[in-house]
View (cartoon, rainbow, N blue to C red):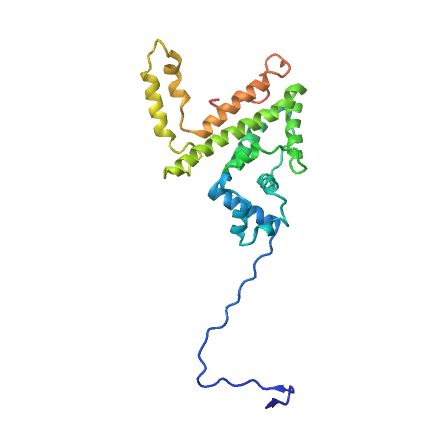
Amino acid sequence: MTDEAAGTPAPVPPSPWDRERPPRARVASRAPLSRERVVEAAFTVLDRQGLDGLSMRQVAAELGVTVSALYAHVSSKDDLLELMYHRLFDGFVMPEPDGAHWQEQLRDFARSVRQRLLSHRDMARISMAHVPFTAELLPHVEGLLGVFRTAGLPDRIAAEAGDLISTYIDGFVQEEGMWADRAARQGGDTSSLARPDWREMAEEMQNYFVSLPAEDFPHLRALGGLMVTDSSDERFDIGLEIILRGLASYLPSPEPGTRPGGDQAPDGA
């Protein structure tokens, strides 16, 4: 039997005993593998397992592909870590150097970098292992050096200051990550950026310092309560302020009646 109008066989009518079947589900096509997807998967693995558990095999498993498929987009694990480090600073822009407000610019820079490093587990460790002198990061280094030189710091000090601040940020964030990992292993709350179990430990340390013999440990007894605070933000800002005031001491002597170092320090620092 044919469909004379179309000249093709007419469709066969369903038989009385055909079973009702649901329509065949359409399988969504998998998004093509790309460098961006590899990096995103690596961040997922990093947050779940930490740097020690991050491997090309784990990233491939996260994507549901073979390890060999990754090498069309990244050349090695080190290459992947560098791409992750670059991705962390996507959209980061150094301000135009302002000699009158260089300290505030550096505070904003340091706080922003810290928050970016804290956004993924173990990123401070990755940062320490990668020099920032790549094409993607050189503009940030250039901008930072511009802040130092526009402020009037001597070239020798300006050349070292960026590494000093970066090392401080990396070390501080790595310590925060170590305490978060410790809390996670003990089943504690890791949602705070401060040391998760620091409040209880701080009280124990303060009580211990007070109990020390006054004749042997007068300074620990006097400063113990100030050495152990429960705010990582406060500790970070105070440490940063010590660095900034040290840098300001290298500036040429200010005019009479003005404060060395440019802008004012934050309240309480």
